[in-house]
Length: 261
Image (cartoon, rainbow, N blue to C red; front, side):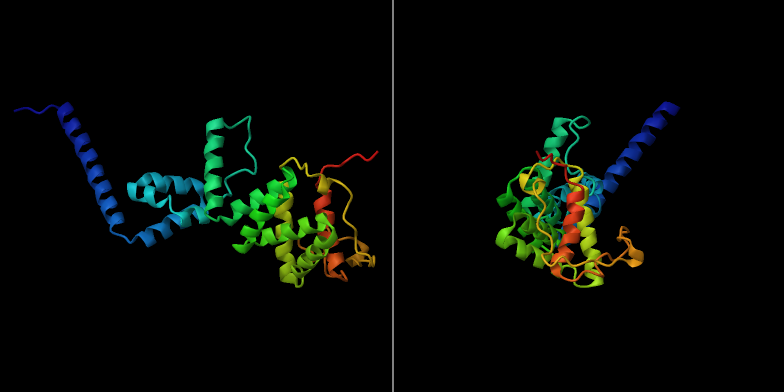
């Protein structure tokens, strides 16, 4: 009996497919044998580094697909690959809806970055201070340092009895050089968001919050203001109010200018 080359080729292809199917089944069996807690931790760590890798893991096998829906996974998912606001010109509505749904799940599961972003948007863009406060407090409770910073800034803008609490909060965040470095990162992150959204809250677009009532004079090295991120710009401030003024100056510098008639 003569076997043609074509037949041999078909047999080889079928053999390759069968081998791949066997390998996939063996992989799935090996995965299924692992404890659910370990599988959840694996997927959560993948999700914490890359959303795309999270999707790839989710699609790799049935077990990972189910584990990917765990609350702990959404809680730890990174949002680095998501823009602050969708680009309506470049992205289809279906994709925007899917992203919005994913971010909502993240917030419901206590993802601190998702809560932080929503809080900032609700206060500065949508003028919904009550909702913003709720989201930011949840983020802060979960350990998001940037949320503490934004809460302090918001309190200063709100004025009255809230202002002193905000000044104290910001002042405490800048007590040491290391804390001031962390605070600068918080400020940088907030400014990055503010430059990407339409800030409409009249509370932050109106008159600048009062400065330090003592009007301390700040002394700068070489007589020049500190404009480098590596410089400790608060090393010469005299009180919490002065320290808070530094932050307010930075925030106001990126807000839309309002014409006063």
